[in-house]
Amino acid sequence: MENPYEQPHPISELISLDALIVEAQRMTFWPGMAMVIQGVVIALLYAVVFSAEIYARGIFRSSGESLLYVIAILPLILVWCGLAMVRLTSRRLSYAGAALSLFLFLPVGLFIGIWALIVLDRLVVREAFRKISNPDASPAS
Picture 1 (cartoon, helix red, strand yellow):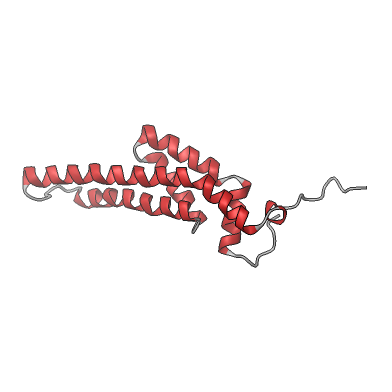
Picture 2 (cartoon, one colour; picture 1 turned 135 degrees about the vertical axis):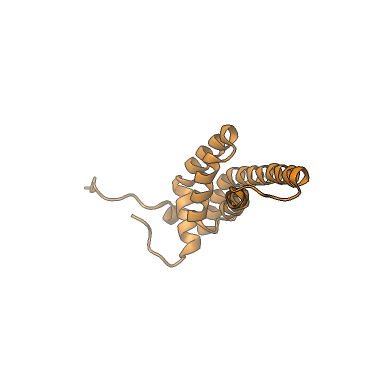
């Protein structure tokens, strides 16, 4: 008689490692590229705004100047996180990019961030990240 409380086999034991990684890359490609494109578009918008500000006043003279620089770095971080998701290099960076995407460029970013979070939560993607980061580890329970 089979034990009803026994954990099912992880997906990585059922299919080969190469097939697992290919499937995970297929699933994460478009959400990751959407994060990259979102980051590039926002970075270009910030470049236009900064150029207009410098052209109008000659140089930044506001008290919130450092905050503007911090905000300008966020799209570049989003590009980095999106590339980590496409390449399956870091699951934490991918989650950070999905969360950052939720708050940047709100109407579209909300859709992209939720899409990325749903894809990152799939079993195939979790197992692929685990296998890539630690190939000798025992299956997750």
